Every structure is written in structure tokens, then in C-alpha cells.
Length: 109
Image (cartoon, rainbow, N blue to C red; front, side, top):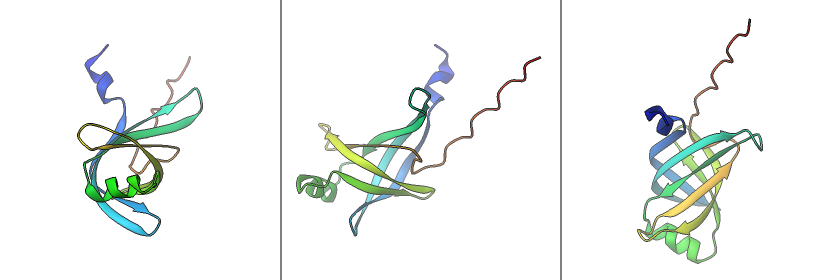
């Protein structure tokens, strides 16, 4: 495995906003994503830093939210709170961050 392998995924780390219905919650996120050729869709995922408002909303039944970053937005599912109180967020299709364009196919002679 090459050292570049860990950099094959697109992503975003920084400030974001989770929107639950009409309620906006400022958060910090770390997101990654990749195109899955088996199902032909882009899959993105990551963690939302510990946030009391997010914990309260998820405990009250919220399971999805719009995630907005400075470069995009997408709806994601909130699941799996880890021991550090961070929730996993994941979605498919257009991610809430800029993705690198696919490389041009090599010319065949």
C-alpha cells in the first residue's frame, strides 16, 4: 500500500452548521468521502465534535439534519455516539464539501 493511499478520499475539517427542521446548531466536523463504483454513488461520512445541543436534539429523536459547510450542504443521518460524545454523520450523493474532479482516463493506443 502506498503512502498516498490515505489521501485518496476527499474531505473537509472545520466549522459547519447542522440544521434540524428550523433550528441551526453551529458545530465542528471532520468529513471524508469517496465514490463507490459498485452502487455508482458518492458516500460521505464523518464525526460531529461533542456538542450539547446536538446531543439534546438526537436524544429527543432527531436522526437526520442538513449539514452546511462553507462550500456546500447535504442531508445526513446522525448515528453512533462515540465515547467522546461525537456523533457519526453520513450521507450519499452530493456531499457538503467540494470534491476533486475524477482523473481523466488514460488514452489508449
